[in-house]
Image (tube, rainbow, N blue to C red):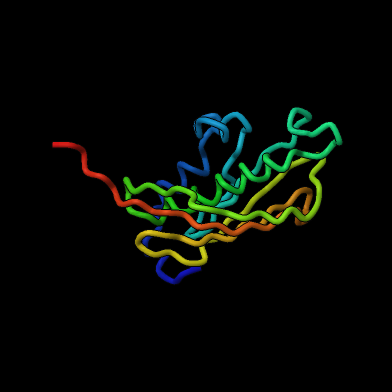
Length: 150
């Protein structure tokens, strides 16, 4: 974790993110029921229940479920450490799928490795039932707050 993240950290925002109803995330994260379970300086963890609707005909969670979870934590980890009103958007990410997920809870933990004024680099580890099932790394573009039109 870059050393200045603790100085930038917004604990009130982190508490709201961690205590939020999964449905409040909106869009696909709300549909999947992604729940933030940890939010500290430069770290964010989230989880999703692997329900039968997320399984392929072969009995494993679709890779897109892991990709959505990775993408969600990749950007969300930035919000408590970037200026209020700034926007964090995934520029790119790569996922290595290590093992199938068949049931239980799928968890992803993101850690900011580098944070500048305009980009962040984030590493993510995914686990299911205690086993590592995926590794990812991505880049997030950070846009400064845009003042409202006059």
